[in-house]
Length: 314
Figure 1 (cartoon, rainbow, N blue to C red):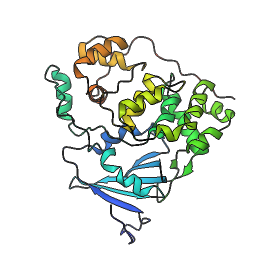
Figure 2: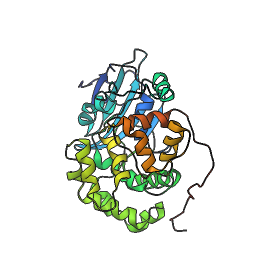
Figure 3: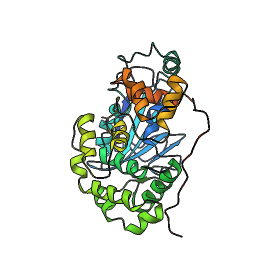
């Protein structure tokens, strides 16, 4: 960790903490960080000419993190706010330093192997923040991506805190657990979040400190699923981000099983069929899913689609 007492040449506000991360392997910053962004309008994540901006509510308070990669391949990480030291300390894990793909055998799937060959810089990163990943996952339950991102955007802008430091205009830090518990029912409703999901989020907020205690991904997933309203899909969506869980599969996703089926066999499958197809990759199933989702491959556009609902009042 490097303290930076001098004003930067760019004239930007001096970061509270700073480090430089040198990847040990091919590295794609944007692709590695993509799962931590909830749509293009996410107030907690932004990309501009300076790099990737991300706000976090760390155990020591809010922080703004800026990640930028130089021509030498080294990632310059700068952070502002009370949680800046914690945020900087988490950078290597966030960028996948602990992720090891060496045991993944794709020799039986030439197409997926080719995807990895073309995109060797995708890694599974660990944010270290369970509750921060949980609320947006709850909001995303059983609704379209459009609905979920719209609700997340509105709630963060209404109830979050301004990002510390020189973050781009409009960036916010997601609320802490106590603030989530105090959001009135009408604000959830106006954001398009039904009572079942808002109750789940409020219940989770009441035990947030326990959820954020350091444990392995499997234990974290079990702990999450012990809460009412949180099942296998939600737990997987969280541990993929909080722990870089290499084996978490989002069972119950509206599109995922069919997409995995089309990619691996040329035909859609259900959740049981997806798990059967992924069984040879146990220990690496999320890595395979990430390759499929990042490949640009899309299943044929036919069959039923989810209908966008509007739970908001007029």
